[in-house]
Image (cartoon, rainbow, N blue to C red; front, side, top):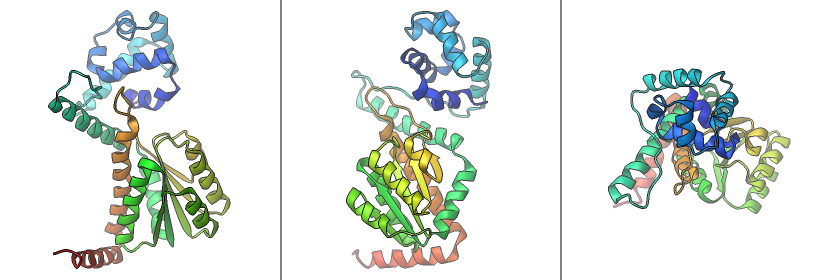
Length: 280
């Protein structure tokens, strides 16, 4: 049992008091090993030890000691300890740079631990079999969708990209079961994206959701869900970090396709040659 991973997955369902307890644990997990229940309740600024009891019971644990044993096991397996740290007004440029880079590395490693290999394999199969791939995303997610549109086009896939709801609806109206919709949404709660995914399913178009919330509205209506694992702090939102992790997930599928398909490599070489002619 990866108790830190379970804690991150459950974070959004915790109460405010429980989130404060979780924040203390995630910020300094080794320090918590030395804490008593009263120490942890004081550090988290919660009303009483009862809040800590409710916290570990919500994780389906029977005692605080059981929680600490599982935490110690987690930490003993970690070859590299990188923790999420919030940015302070007193931090200098070097410190802030280190915190942002470490948070991004941490998010990638956490997602690697939680990403379901079977789902990645199934997603890769859908990418391979699709006659046309639609990459949809709004705002920051649009940047991820466009990057994927560019990459998969280079290996010869027939791709479309849009960040406009009306154009998305128009494209989707003419889709068939041979198409594939890749919906990028960190929250998974953008109403129009969820509506488009539902419409795609009605048209027998499979939907792959790239999201930061595996229990989101988008995830619930999608064929396959590939979820990032990030954490928000006071200044840096989890959406900032998840954008990088979403790119890594799509890069993984891209690489799987290219590695298994000789034709994809040939297409990539032709794409490189075409682009080279545009440069000095």
